[in-house]
Length: 188
Image (cartoon, rainbow, N blue to C red):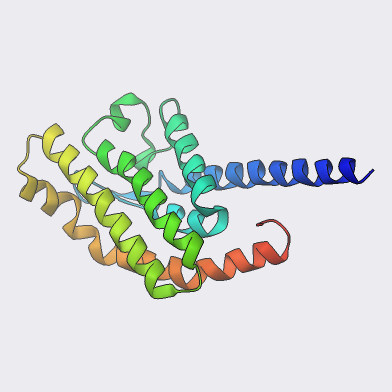
């Protein structure tokens, strides 16, 4: 009887993980298209969702959620500005979309280990975002036939202050969300 109960509990936790991944993916699909076009790279809420997903899901499941979002974006208009398809994914801003993957992995590792150390988590998100900026800027420069400096000016500089605000929000609010989810038995 205890084996059945243990299997039931393990499978229900697995179901809850899948459900949480689905919910966060859906939130990304809803908030991702909301964008403010200010140039070749729009202001988007995608990175804010990823920052919070690292606290809500942990590194592994947050990365899975984002990969599902990218896959959906191949077929559905879930990217910034309501765009989708291979043209958007591999177009001038596609490097930022792919850059979110290493950002989620590297930042997520630190957040998973040091969630209560806000300075470490803040620095991890800043470094992860810088890596994303690197991928995005290099790809934007290549795709748009810009110099790296011009791509940096178009795709990074206007976003630094806003992204720092998003990071602070995630570092302050994220641990509280994770603790509440753990208390509710949703996050193990």
